[in-house]
Length: 331
Image (cartoon, rainbow, N blue to C red):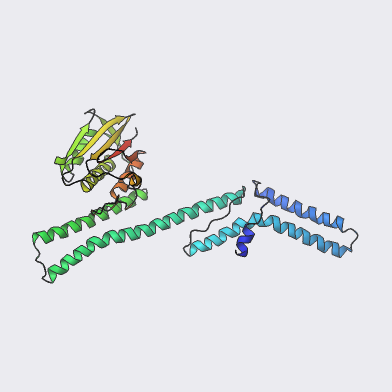
């Protein structure tokens, strides 16, 4: 254990006090008291020896009491220097209840936020690099074969190239959406709209509208929300249902009123999501164990769009298939 850590573990008798000014006053009073006490004890000594001893005792008392007052500042300085080198794991002992203790707790919170942001940045770079590498490698291999004359540039080959290009475009679009949401650049533009017409429009733009059933009760149900953001949510959920379900999966989109708001459910007859993964599927780049080429961002974007409405999104317990519910409170 280093000397700094040993000193940091020393008792801090003034920590319970809530004011730094009161601590400073007590420090002065304690120093004068012990200096006077030593003068009284050594009254028969020569004056210079008594004075030296009184000063030494006063200095020792001052060091003991002042250590606990200034230790958080020294710890913050060391932690700040560590942060400059990329180490965000250092924390400050914040047992004091005065202004410096509050500063130490704020510093620890800042360190945690910076550590989380740095971890997210590293994970994002790694995940994006991984997601980009797959379609780019496939395109490169395809184009090399065509250029070398190994394969003819027929419709089937071009279809593969188009699929990979669409995957790249989808990843870039979702990353831009994610950046806007996390940066607070997305503002809600609420409006009252008929839910049935809204859902029919979303389904018409889906992969296969014939496999989607829209059920709105009552038929004239209306909602108050940002249609662009809500379109993004429902479209991602329907696309996710097609992606994870069997070849001819049937998708049902339901809407019901709920305490002045609206509840939307998207259900499919696919394999479903394991209970242990249901809380993680809304995280970035999490695909619930799927390896079908999804970016793992669709449900994360859906969650943020729902959060903008102060709503809630969850995976429901179902006997078969998967059902995701979106609850939007009244405006």
